[in-house]
Length: 533
Ligand code: G3I
Ligand code: 9MR
Image (cartoon, rainbow, N blue to C red; front, side):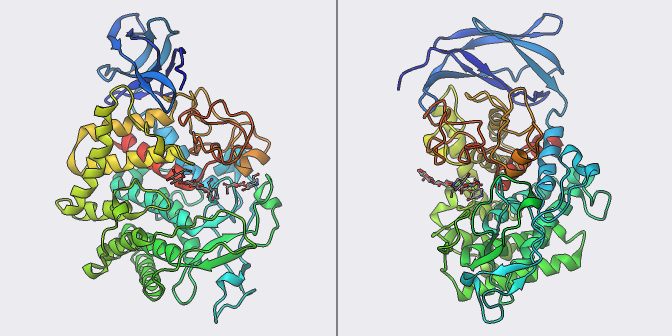
């Protein structure tokens, strides 16, 4: 790999917390001195950075840490030989982006008109009411033969497309429920102007309920859960109300059904103090889904030939079994639900890798247990990267740069934060904060990867409403997929094939410039962590 001789400084474009871990990424082929200067010209911190080669970015980088600066204010960071960069240190710099990230779930609601008083410029007509959805041949049952119409309204659009997928909705909803569980007090007071604001539920739970209501409707009478609610193919870049393609529910399977069981069981716990009847309803739905899964223990999703939308296919079901069993055991008190821990329980959570979610719930439920030790081991492995690559560590491994790499970073942050919330380990927390700096601009593309936020923003998301609404700034608050060297979209114009640089701000680029609910959800979690304390 040819080494770059480039020099550049990449900072968190939304500012830094007074008490937080603070740093910028510096690209530089040589060691350099640096100084942080306050508004009156006084130096408040200084040092020298020594770069190391970062193969995924093909360049020499260093992480410049200025955490010792702990006074709110406007600063200038100068690195010898480079243009100085303005740095803001303030109380709670990410509260607005947190609220916007949560608001983006509202702005991606299916089946509902977005009113101007809540959505501002992003107000739009309702589309995809989904009150007359066709049962696809792959989902036919005795009670609901092919062509039967069911009603499954609401829920969030998955991503840049307008389909609704149970598996991906599952991890997203769990992640938001987990944020609520960890930061209940914080959410009891936070509102971001949605139609339910001021009602019986905190906005967080009201938003989550909008998706849970849809998920409930995806359960067949026998307890099995449809994989997705979808058109047969991806529709063009149009507004929701313009799409009149027929929509179908497709193939019931074990992955979707266990995923549903896990989320409903978790939801029954979070909603219990607010609505015991609803809580019981969620738990019963979870039990029925479990029963169906016991009868169909190994039925993976099969994409029907006439359906070409997102697959979310997964052959490995041991992690779904473990996760659902863990959530049901916690919610019912019956430990016989607990299943063998799969090997993938060491993996960072992803839509296809959910064992660690079960581990997180069990560790939260029993902090001094083997569950916690296993979770802590994952966090320790992430943290150990810091020792092997002293210059720059997070997401630095090639395997992390997949479709949705920014969400890999945010899910890593989530694991570190949970382990830190349980153990008090400050090192984990600092690393998680560093990962937030990364997605908010301290990365070698120089982009802030949250739509609508930052001094260098992506403008051309692969997000249908953002592309079709005629508004220059995309729907705000969403986490963008990010660098992915596989470039599955085959778009022309990528600046590089290197893992950390393979990102293209073009609507064509669905494999780097889309957004998805399972990516924004762990961003919300991380932002909540650093906004509530
Ligand atoms: O995990 C493997 C890794 O081991 C391997 O080295 C690497 C090399 O190619 O691939 C990795 O798997 C990739 C996987 O994402 C990682 O999560 C697959 O190649 C890649 O095809 C897969 O992409 C998924 C994509 O759909 C295509 O199926 C994304 O995870 C998933 O987020 C994305 O989801 C789409 C929905 O289908 C439709 N709606 C939009 C949504 C977001 O783009
Ligand atoms: O627009 C689709 C996007 O939302 C999906 O994430 C992506 C991967 O499944 O697929 C996109 O649709 C593309 C399709 O897969 C291939 N033809 C071009 C489509 C985008 O314009």
